[in-house]
Length: 168
Image (cartoon, rainbow, N blue to C red):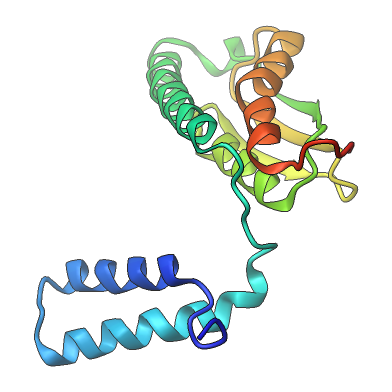
């Protein structure tokens, strides 16, 4: 069964999204949704880094709320900066954030949070997974920015994804 349906949550999500997009439950739509839900996870199975073993769902929920709140605040701040400042007064920089996190799923979540947050438009993970390079739209204090990333995102991701007792 696992070979035919490698990711039941992904299959279910694709099925529901397809039905919502088509706003129909006729036979052809149901059939195409089922086919999509079966085929896409099979074709993308090798792209998923590793089986996710989430250790602390409460920490994950707290992280999700913190990331969404930060995204909303950042969107407001970026909009304000775009509307009120000239480009010469913006201090855009690339910041290197040293990482302890090594789990591929945790790193993927961190990269998504960073790239989805307005004001951090671009990110790159070093080949050895020890540093994250982030472009910051208007950097005020580099050390404060790094400390915030490590405290608000990396620490919870370490709790959620990295097995206890392992060192990076």
